[in-house]
Image (cartoon, rainbow, N blue to C red):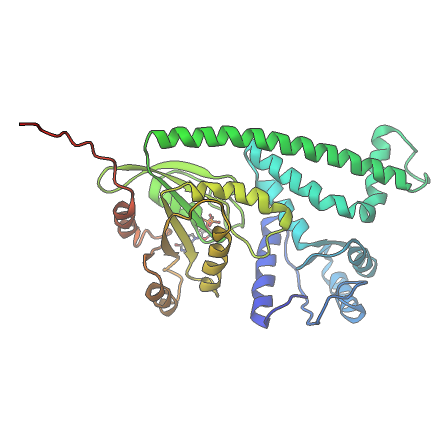
Length: 364
Ligand code: GDP
């Protein structure tokens, strides 16, 4: 169930499928349901849930992923019906972020987000969680031991809150050191260019093209959670740094917004922004506005922006023309074939801040 038009729902489902593949799953089948609101008991409603059960049985699927956020009781209700594990979009996205976080700061941020997601759901997952915890602390003997009492859940909650507070302190400390590093780069007066854009738009590929660095390129969402920063050179020989930032995604879980913001600070602190758009996507204009809406919420100024329409080798020329006519600073490229990259470098050079030129005043 999703709100909005049929195309919105289809795009959202398509993205959900790509997300699940990124997490290492294989997509077997799907069902769509149009309702005015989700069913409180089973999310889908009895009839559709039954249809899903038949599909699950026929395909041998071991997990159902729902495009939306399920309440604990909806998740249980649907699990009872389909007899396999049910997860929602948020849990899936958190899982992918956890798989891809590389830096200490990134890992800590994802862990914090996972706890935030878990905390209100503790009751729903209580049984299996405390069976595990029971095993660890040796309380109860698992099988046949009584279910968790309210106290057990309270204890788990308190433990989680303590962990969250610790993570928040650690993240604050790491942030300070990152900002110091950034300040020192700035003092060296190397102009900073940031790459931002929707997930899978081709940001890492573009970074590779512009710097020749062997950054991992995956046909997967969120190959980059932590910013990668490389040196690059303009045609006139001037150096600049190029930072690849986190990819945007539809309905980002609220628990991740904070982590996302701090990664995006790299953007508000840059001299120039390359806003990469996948020209071959069904709705590139929608992606442009979604990215801009998030950027507008950042503290500080959004730097001057060049819209880079990528994947022109696979895009509809009419769509490209439409975007070109709308945007003041825009260029169409293919990170894959290299087409348009020279022009992009010329444009970057034009837009880079001029170095402060010291003028010796000659006194006659
Ligand atoms: P990111 O998530 O924005 O960093 O995107 P990636 O750079 O990882 O690219 C996502 C996918 O798009 C990969 O499969 C790339 O090979 C593909 N890709 C990137 N640039 C191009 C391009 O110019 N043309 C085509 N056809 N595919 C591209």
